[in-house]
Image (cartoon, rainbow, N blue to C red):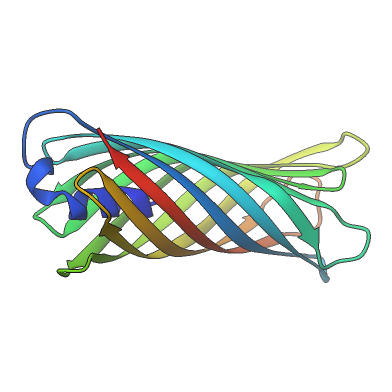
Length: 217
């Protein structure tokens, strides 16, 4: 959720210091390894996804809207199908040239056959980067405290909460003055609990690899 924000700020530190509105868009593709465990049952799958984002910067402030959904999914667990989609809105501030603080709102939805597992709510985080003459390596971490909903095939809905962390490591470089490329590795782990009338908790672990192109305008 933070790789684009950090890379944009770090790659364009001199631009971000100006008081003019700057925009960047990104198209990316990704591979995700999903792992869910609940009540002694473990479900695993792989997902190929596509996404897009739009980021605005003025001075040292920036905001980003992003979305991602699966194109193809493969389950490693018999008789289970996967679908996954995510959206996030982030607002941040650059502290110095290489450090960023951010907060935002996100939601993620996983479909396991007829089961729906949804989490949505707020997150906060921080990141730092190391510029080089070849590009920028950045790292960020975020903590989320989300509301959760679980719906089973009988249309019973259960509400609870989900808490967890996300870690991102990314590399971004310039192709031209207006075009950047990026590679990132993201791991998030959320723990779903306190469901009403549900006697088990759910652990969600997702490892993502993304590759994308960013255009500045």
